[in-house]
Amino acid sequence: MKKGFALWFTGLSGAGKSTIANLLVERLHTMDRPVELLDGDEIRKNLSQGLGFSKADRDANIQRIAFVAKLLSRYGVIAITAAISPYRETRDRAREEIGTEHFVEVFIDCPLQVCEERDVKGLYARARTGEIAHFTGISDPYEAPTHAEITLHTNRETPEESVESIVAYLAETGKLTRDEMLSSNHSYTPQEEALVEERLRNLGYL
Amino acid sequence: MKKGFALWFTGLSGAGKSTIANLLVERLHTMDRPVELLDGDEIRKNLSQGLGFSKADRDANIQRIAFVAKLLSRYGVIAITAAISPYRETRDRAREEIGTEHFVEVFIDCPLQVCEERDVKGLYARARTGEIAHFTGISDPYEAPTHAEITLHTNRETPEESVESIVAYLAETGKLTRDEMLSSNHSYTPQEEALVEERLRNLGYL
Image (cartoon, rainbow over all chains, first blue to last red; front, side):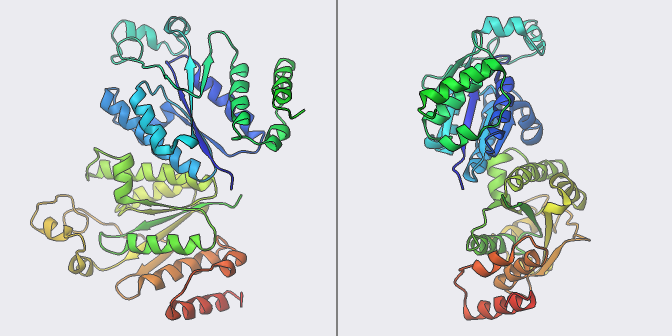
């Protein structure tokens, strides 16, 4: 059985975590890799009902995600977690729990101002009026990673480009094999196709 | 990838859930099947800290176990859950969540009196004095299964016999294959060996 691992996304609300995670799931499926997305909202519904957004509650939520990601990765699954996970120490505990060789921290970096302008779910507006308390970036801290394996700048790259950066990292570190990289039957846009071909050439696979 | 499934143990404290579950894990490992034990105490520590033993809290705990068992079984893992899970309706919800074709309810049946006499963890004594409230069988209900796939009578069979009953059921229903049954390199006691041989003969494998 292939080794699984966790792709631990972290970033502000609206930075693009879920968008990239969903595209990445599709991309990895084309390589026939088992992959499970542990989305922040989904996990709160299924594992953390009743928890709020205090530091203690956020930490408990993250620890639960880490526990499940560890279980899944043990059985060959790529577990993608897409919760804000704002605290550095808590992420480092997740890294320790899962094992650093099976842990890839992916910093979805996007300036607060850009996230707030997007405000896809209308949450920033409600956080600014104080209707929502403990809102990361507004009334609650966000501690950016200092040693993330991957940093994506979603204010100046497309989600597809972000996905290809992650795939390239996984290929370079052997977490995806040459065969998997070449087997992918993803239907690329012409733009993506050029990108993927370049990556494969850089890896010496073409 | 082989299909996973959940072995959903239910029974009173002291009925033998953990003992049988641990032996079963060893037995399935010898067949090279991925298997994960979701023990009641372990899950409470990792997923349900803060939950108590009211019906609502017990239900939330069971739903979390079901969520994790479902994820694991999706990736070929045999998930063994060993929590009391006293409420019939809640177990039925777990069955529905996981899918009844991937759900094997295992009733670890043992008379309350016998469990209480064993009182391995000293909990019954503390429940009788009222020091522990909401204790299943004493001050909280236990609803025995009405349609469990497997019922084990742990007051009149050894844990090894219970394990072989489960293995036989899994073989008969095709959840373990002939090859897996014959490949097991478990080191049996002479008593177990006779039992296993009989099972294999009954299955027409010898």
